[in-house]
Length: 143
Image (cartoon, rainbow, N blue to C red; front, side, top):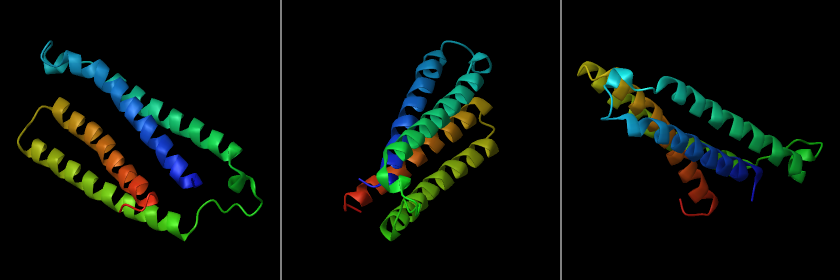
């Protein structure tokens, strides 16, 4: 398994954990309290922090333990890795464009800012999952 594939697996795990943590705190409030009173801003910020911290810790641990990273030449990816990253990022970008478009439509329709924020955050996380999913399938030769 290449270093970049390991990084993508770590990003997927961290993203799923952070999103799950966030949803467990916010979803139960929907329908129970008015939208203006739902506590979502700090949990969203904390979820982003959780994701970043988990990704950094995972990357450092993998870099320390991966012999290819410790080599003096510093080459941790090859042409295949770069092609897979490019393809996955393109698909993730397409998904994020759809999320952004949905948020713009919601703004035009005067949808409550809570729902717009949720669309951007959850949609952004899911766009990341799409990106990583394409990369992981490509590493297995299925894309």
